[in-house]
Image 1 (cartoon, one colour):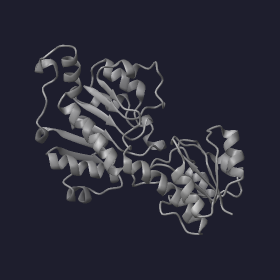
Image 2 (cartoon, rainbow, N blue to C red; image 1 turned 45 degrees about the vertical axis):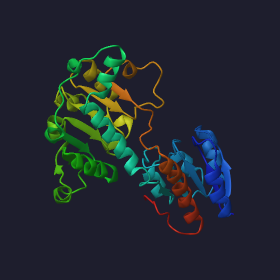
Image 3 (cartoon, rainbow, N blue to C red; image 1 turned 135 degrees about the horizontal axis):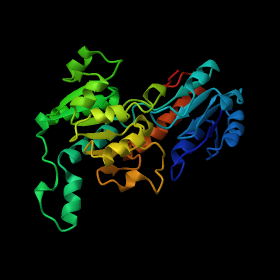
Image 4 (cartoon, rainbow, N blue to C red; image 1 turned 90 degrees about the vertical axis):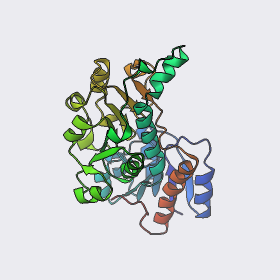
Length: 316
C-alpha cells in the first residue's frame, strides 16, 4: 500500500485529506510536527509526504530511501531543497493556481486603501476628528503608477484589475518579455525603475536565494516619500530592519504587509508600533474556495503519484 504522511498543517479537521486518500486506498498518517528528528522518522516510513511550513532539507531526504514525492499545501516552495530532491530522484509538487484571485484582490485592496488614506482617516475619525487634511493628498488613479515585482499568475491578474480601474502599471520579471507585458497594457521595467517611479510597489516574486532581501536599504531610499510598499509574497524578500528604518525616518509613506520575515510575528516587534504599517496574518490566500482547493490539489498530487503518474503540479 502506498504510504503518505502529513507532516504539518493548520486545519481544524482533516476530513478532506482523509476522505480523498481513503477512497484512493492510500495509507494515511499524521505527524503534526516540524521537529527534524521526527520528520526524518516519518519520512523513512513514507512514499510521499505533505507539508505546509515544515522544512525539508537534504539530510531528511537522504534518510528516506522510499520517499518519492513531497507535496506542499501552497505555491511557495522555499522550505524544500528542490535541488537536492532532484538529485535524489524525489519529485516536488505544489499548488500553484489556487489563490490567484484572492491574493491579487488582497494586494488591490491594500493599494486602494493606501491610495484613499482609509486607515489614516479611520484612526482620526475614530478618535473624534473630522479633517480630510489629516492625510497626504491622494493621486487620481489614472495619475498613479503601480510597480509589480514579478509577473506570474497573481501579479498578472492584479495588473488586469488595476488597469480596469485606471492605474498605470509597470512590472519587473526577467522571464517575461516586454512584448508579452505590452499585450496586457503593462510596461516592462527594471527593479530600479519601479522603485524610483512607482507610487505603489507590490511584491510578487518567489522567495529564492536571489530574491532574499531583494528590497533593502538601497531600494527603499529610491522610493518616493509618498509611496507605499505592499508585500503579499514572502517576508524575507524585504529586509525588515531596512524597512523599519525607512518608515521611522519617514522615507516612505507606509507599508501593507501580509507576510513578515518571522511568522508568527513576535508580540514585541517594531512593525507593530508603526502607524504607517497595516498588517494581516498571512491571510491573502484565504477564501472558501481557496481553502478547499489548496488541500484537494495537494492531495491529488499524491494520488496521481500513487497511480504511477506525474503530479499535475510537478516542479522538478
